[in-house]
Amino acid sequence: MTDCIFCKIVAGTIPSIKIHEDDLVVSFMDIHPLRRGHVLTIPKEHQQQLHLLPPETRAHLVNTVARIAEAVYRSSLKPDAVHYAVNDGPAAEQTVPHVHMHLLPRYKGDRMSFMMRLLRKPFDLVTGPVAGDVLMRDADAIRAELARVS
Ligand SMILES: [Zn+2]
Image (cartoon, rainbow, N blue to C red):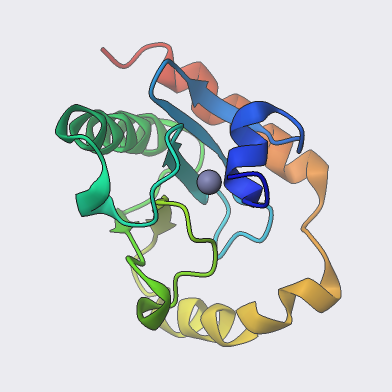
């Protein structure tokens, strides 16, 4: 879709900090992260909802996100847990109408700061993206570990 921001990332007409790319999916850093190490993974095929994707693409998407989770666990971010999240339609807070799975590092005792961050999220468009150097550093750390995940 020509007006879809994620299709533009797939096409490379909008820049992104990529973690992984293959024939079916692309993973990149969220520029408005809820947490450091917040990674989005999208299918290259434009579909709005997970059940509309071809089964092999859907399976590959989930497998890719799980591999990236392993890399995040091994990285210097060292989360205690992660969220895998798909907002599958506008009524479920989907803001870009192209399937995307969030991978979010979580830490013991971070519930309050996480909730506060969720509340601030709607104002991100006013404050702009977070510092690129932090995103780059975390992306490098995740990519380095991903190369070691089978
Ligand atoms: Zn799209």
